[in-house]
Length: 281
Length: 185
Image 1 (cartoon, one colour):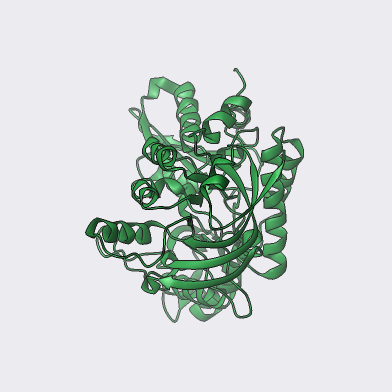
Image 2 (cartoon, rainbow over the protein chains, first blue to last red; image 1 turned 60 degrees about the vertical axis):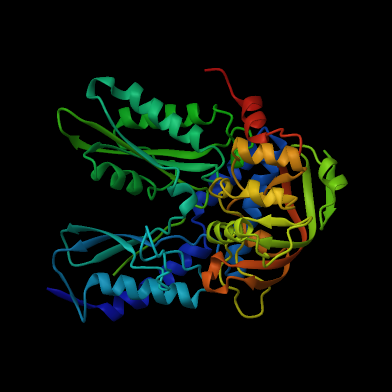
């Protein structure tokens, strides 16, 4: 059994959170720059160029890319031969989130009680943690801060199995068009198909952290992603919803097995600031 | 397309001179307010009590900045989704509000109030908070400090880049723009 202390995890996760807030991943930068080059709308081009300038300023001046520094979401692959000591993995990630948000001047965006008091927790947490047990003696952590604007426009449906791919395509398209400018297009569209009521949205969230434009390894799903991207970018929604071509930077679909009676589909939208960062301990 | 240089406070003439699709560089004083601040302002209006800010000729920016680091005027400060303020904006417009800055379309009720009272809605680029911060010269909390990022901040801005998304005639770029670029499939 390899032992890893929570202090070790905290020390590495704090800078990981700051990187995610200030430094847009290279694949996302390239996708936005490409969108700016090929945008037919002059206004759309002007707004996309502002986004290019924005991520350069953010990285250079260590300022958050977006004021909505989001809820901290962690995907953690925990090797089965690892034992976390000095506390729980949850403690480590909660402490690291609080420390990063406070030392990095990130916005505390979490309230304790959703329905009544809505009092800010002051620690931007506790974070949302998805743990996966894997072979080995390492811990792999992906941190993906998620803003409210795009999360609010995400949707889920339990479709009829016989409705098939056409119904899935229509649901994704309607979700994107209904969202309009609210989720800050050009967006990344994460789709989870299959599983059940709780797994489809987690698959959709996971789809958002796949490197941009890397197709699904299954060619049928890869073709579907390509077709959906073209359809979405013909919708006219465009940059910021004000008209144009660049409505989405990518469509990523993750799928898994499901019940004979079900066709669950979840569409999780991400703004153009598709922030994430990973490390391995 | 010409770029309008606009100075606050917004006069009725300035409002009526702006058309949907115009690019604007805004300078002067604006106030941030989002969900909770809007809710509180409307409660005060309902009770007939004084507001912590003067709405006459004023522009409200739907935004909640990140904390200001030492030596800077403000943190990251892009727009938030305006639709969440739709329930409150008509009341503020009737009380004198002349401009709003945010992202995303507005409800028919907001647009009606804008037409009847001569107000304009600007779109700022969502997710460009670091760039917009460079156009903010100072930021002071003037009300509801306990709300943290949801408090009302008075900001002095210089050349804040905006687009007229809905003008005082009710012309809506969130409808017109996508229609223009939609491809028949």
